[in-house]
Structure formats: structure tokens, C-alpha cells
Length: 370
Image 1: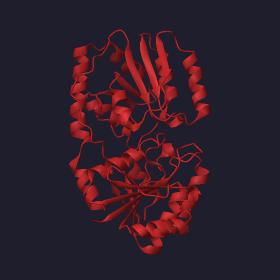
Image 2: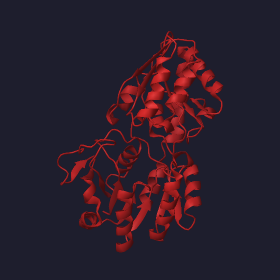
Image 3: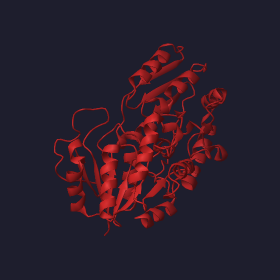
Image 4: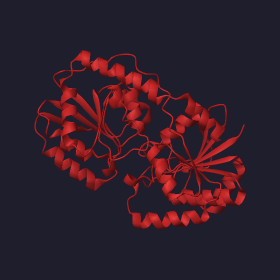
């Protein structure tokens, strides 16, 4: 079988990195038996100094994937090249554009050894993600000087393809959306309590995910609700601003910070809530949105994701951030739903997941990609 080496900044058992590890796990599971997958990743948790694993000199085997965790010095060209040469992959699949510690050695190896290189920036080039442009634009121009001419860029949304064409017009690109987690749709209906509706926010706590906006919306709600927040606190200053808003909430709004959820527990957590409130500034794919929908937890999200068709199917709400009142109205509508209306919403949600999320064509396109 052909060997595919995936290079990325993060992988399980790390908990704080968000969607990219989930994307790769799902891809490897979907193509299991067709390719030998290897992952080389950093031996660290986001914002942590201690190593993720004590033994990082061996290959670890999980979900039929060979994974090696490297310390920073192992990404220096000499050591990195030695590791890659031992594998002799037919394809290098790079899961970042701005993580220069892993990007530069991968590109240099591909160029020197004429190995097929596919780069999936994972939304890093979207306008909502381009912070500190004064640093990133020169970096982009530098990368154009060293990129192999046959490098293929992968975008997972129409917006990302547009940004790839803008920044890299001389390189080929392909649209291939992320694959969802192989989870069976939950068959049972969640019992919605009329006296207190439960909302959940589950994501990294950074400005981009827009928790502060969610809290600002809830201040205008007069009914009793529970709003539980899950996710790693990455931006302490932003969390401080959110905490100040939480302290000023009226008594009818109960808010709790519940910590970080491991990947295997996400579905179980979503099952406990009536709605997922997630007014994100932008999502290239939004694995957490898909996980909520698959878990029968209807979503109230911004219209800056690929999932705006939930408005057509009437399985949730995708709303513009410029119109706060629409979010307030959607939450009030969610609160006032009786069980019959809620069951219909869940039924529409299942139809949306079957028709728009699961896609055998994408699996076949990934097979052809490698």
C-alpha cells in the first residue's frame, strides 16, 4: 500500500487544539485499509511546557495509524529528514501553513526529494484568521519562493478556495471538505424541559469563537436558561472580559464554566443540552458544529460557516452577527418550543445530517488525492 505521511502541529491525546486532529482521525478511519497512514506531530499540548508523552522515540499505534511525537529539536532538517526517509512516503500531507517549525522542513524535504506535497492550511488563510498581517504577508511571499511548483493546496470550503486562489494563483488547488466523525445518528429524542432550557458553548475560548457575543445576547433573555461553557481557556484576557459579563448577568441566566471535554466524550456532553449556541466569527468547517448536529443538539450559529443551509431545512439557525436581535429572537423561539416542535426540529436535523454532512463522494475523492 502507498504510505501517506501527515505532518501537523497537534494530535491526540492532546485536547486543546480544536478541529484539525479530528479531521485527520476521521480521514484515516474512512480510508483504513487503502493506505498506510503515518503522523508526525509535536510532543506538546497547546500552551503547555511539559511533554505530552514521556516516550516519544517510538511509533505509537492508534486507530490503525502510526503516530510519532517529536520534540522541537527533532524538526531540525537533519533529524526530520531521517525520520521521513525511514518511512519513504509517496505523499506528504501538511496540515498547516503558518506553523513554520513543521512547515519549513516539510517543504524543503518535498522539494529536495521530489515527493508529492499537499498543503491543507485548515482555515489559516481565511480573513477572519489572519491576525498580525504585517508578519504573515511577508511570510506568504517568502513561502512562494521555496514552494515546489507542483504543490497542491486543499481547501475545505468555498471561502478557503477563494483565499487560496488569491494568495497562490500559480499553484493548483482542490476543494475537498472535511469528513465527519463516523458516529451513528442518535435515535432517541432528547426530552426538552420547558421550565429551563439548556444551552451549551463548546469551543476554544478565544476571540474568534465569539463567546463574548453569546453572553451579550443572553443578557436580553428574560426566561430561565442554563448556559454551560466548555473548552480550553487560551486567551486569558478575553476570558477576563467574558467573566465580567458573566458576573453582571441577571438571576434568570445560570452560567457555568465546565472545563475541557475529551474528544471521546463530546457526543455524551452534547446529549445533555437542548441547543448549541456558537456565534463564531468564521469556521472553515466547524467540526464541533457537525458533532452537535450528529448528537441531535440543534445549533444556533453565525452565518460564517459552511452550514447555512440549516435555515432552508429548518433544522437550526444560521444568523448574521450584524443583527444581534435575530439571535435574541432565535433563542426566545428555542425556549418557547414545546416537545412536539422540538421533535420536528430534531427530525429536520437528522435529515440535514444525512443529506448534507455524510458524503461518499468526498471519501472517493480523498482516495484519488493520494
